Image (cartoon, rainbow, N blue to C red):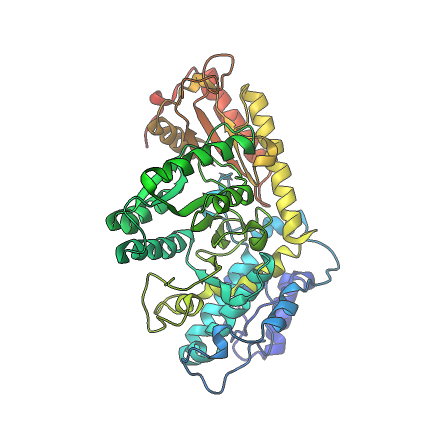
Length: 516
C-alpha cells in the first residue's frame, strides 16, 4: 500500500487508523513529519504511536550553557514529581496478543530465556525512539538548544520517583553500569593518587562482581596503590545470614595492618550466579565497620526489584534501564548521594558543572535511549499493576519454570525463591559433566546452534565441603540461569528441558559436544 503525495494529513491519519485499528494508538512524545509516500513498513512502525500536533516540550528563548540553566535540572522538581507519578486510566489492560505484537521483531523460533544479559525493548518504545531520532535529524540546532536536556530532565524526574529519591539533581543518566563503575572507581583512584587514602586501604567486593567492575579497579585503583579484597559468595545460597557472615570476614581482612575499607561494591542482584543480596543489611554492616562509601551495582534491578534508594542507604546506586525496564540500549541511571569530585569519564565542555549535566552531553552521539523513559512508563502502565505487576509476574513464572526444570532433571535451585527476582539458577544433571568454564560455554553454544535456545551456563567448582550439592549420580557443578520476561511462554522452558533430557538419553557429556 502507498499513500499518494497529494493526500492531506487527515487522509493519511485515516489510512493509518484503518490499517492499525483505533485501539492500537499510544502516545508519542514528539511530532513526526510524514514522508511523501508511506509504504507498509512505515505503517507498521507508525501504527504503534499517535502523532500529536504539538510536542509537550516547551522551547527556551535563551539557550545558554551556564551552570544555572534551568534545563540542567535545578528547577521545577515539584512539577516533574506530579507528572511522573500519574498513571493513565486504561479501558483495559494489554492482551497476550498485543504483548506478542510488541515483541514481534524478535527472531522467530528462538527460545529467549536470557533477558538478563541484553534485555528487550517493545515496538512502541522503539517507535518513540525513532521519533526522537527523526526530531533531532530534522533540526539539530533547535534540538540541542531547546529540547535535549529538557527531555533528559523529564526522564531523570521519572526515575527519581521510581526509586524514592528526593532531588532530581542526585540522578544522572549514563550509558550502562560499566560507565557508572568507571565514574565511581575513577573517583576512588584519584583519592588514592592524591594521598587522601593510604597504601593498606582497600576496596571490597564479592568474587562474582561483574568482570567490567573488576577491570575498572584494575585500571583506576590498583595503579594508585589501592588494595582489593574479594569475598567468596556462598553458592548455592541458603540464607542471608551466611552471605552477611562471609562479608564480615572480608571486612576484617580489609582492616588488617591498620588499613581502612574505603569502598564496598555490593551487587543488588549478582549476575553469575544470580542471587538477590541483602543490600540493606550489608550496607548496615559497612556503616558499623566504618566503610567510607558503598557502591551498589544494581545492573539487573530496576524493573526486576523494588528499589528504594533512601531505604537501602548506598552512596552510589546504578541500574541499567535496558535489562528489565524495556529501554532500548543503552542507558542506566546513577544515583549519587554526594557528587562532589565525581565526573563522567568522557570530558566535554560541560565538565565541572555536576555529573548530571556532564552526563547529559558527552559529545555528539545518539541520546534517544535517554529520552524514551516517559514512553517506557506508558508501556508498563498498560499491564495490570504496572511495573510492580510485571515484577510479580516475572518472579512467579521464573520460580515456576525453574522448579519444573529442577524436578525434571532431578537437581536443585541455586537459591530459595525469595532470593531471586526475574532470574533463577537451576542445577544441571551431574551426568552432563560440566567441569570447567569451557564446558559451560560449549553447552551454551550447543543449545544456541542446535536448539535455538539462548540461556547462560554457569560452572561452579567443587569446594570439597558438605555444601557441595549432589543429585543421584554425582556432584552438581553446572547451572543454567533462566530469565522470565513478559514475552516468554512456558514452551521456551520446556524446549530447554527436552534438549537437556535428550543429551542425557544420548549419553552425551559437555566435552563431546561440537564447539562452534
